[in-house]
Amino acid sequence: MDILFSSLAAGILFGMALSLVALGLTIIFGVMDIINFAHGEFLMIGMYTGLLTAQAAGIDPLLTLPVAAAVGFLLGIVCYLGFIKFLLRGPMIAQLLGTFGLMLFLRNLALLIFGPNDRAVHQGLLVGKSFDIGLGIIIPATKLAAAGLSLAAFAAVWLLMNRTRTGKALTATALNPQGARYMGIPTERMNALAWGIGCASVTVAGALIVNFWSVNPYIGLLFTMLAFAIVALGGFGSVPGAFFAGIVVGLITELPGFWDFMTYTFEFDWMSDIPMTSFKYMWVYVAYFVIMVVRPRGLFGWKH
Image 1 (cartoon, rainbow, N blue to C red):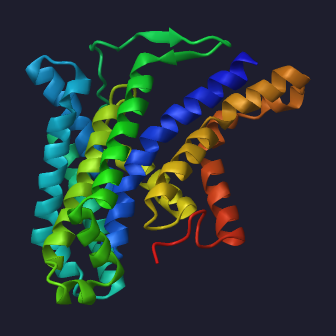
Image 2: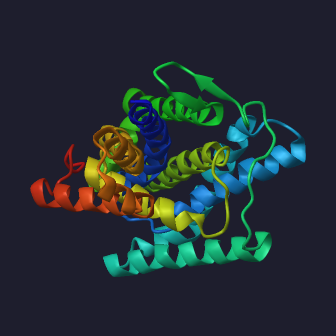
């Protein structure tokens, strides 16, 4: 049972961090109907920002979140004003290829600056520490902190989107851009703000994840694919969908732990011969495929 409870806890904690990763993608798509293939590269930038800021300033990596948020927000604004807004004038294929090109540019720029080797956090208040909460569940302190702070950041963005005039303006721009302009809402500014908030969300997630995950210039691809699976499962443009689907995907990534539990509990020797760890991300896309067949609009439907 220890393996089962530990896998459940690990999946939920990782899923909370993944929810914050997917939130940025959800906001950008929800407001502008554009799919950002460079989303994972912004997470990679957040990971490098958290790591390098902590090393340069000699502070705990968890204290770098404001820096990561500011870098992500400003970078999102710059990318929108300097590049994305021109893509929106073209067909969908131009938008897809444009964000794909942005992904390649950011990845290769990071490769040029930082090199291909992995970098990781080795010092910090919570690094190497863990909590035994009973039932055989031992939780790394960094993952627990990342999950809690991800939940707080997610809640802050949700409140901004649903309880403020700015959030209502963003929602109006998403639902009917032309009608929003007639009502005096500066839709161009709202689009830029959506990119800023979306990119800030994912860079903060990156600064949290780097506390327990090494970073290299190629890390963005994995998290881009996971984020796409999450927003598709939850429903493109659905903020609650991103949260709950993130936790579902987090639990699916811990399938090897559930597999080990079944193997040792029921003594299925043949199960021990299957390297389930090598296939854990495959099951995320199996779940995505099943949802697309059974409920194409996702668990919470599309934004409209």
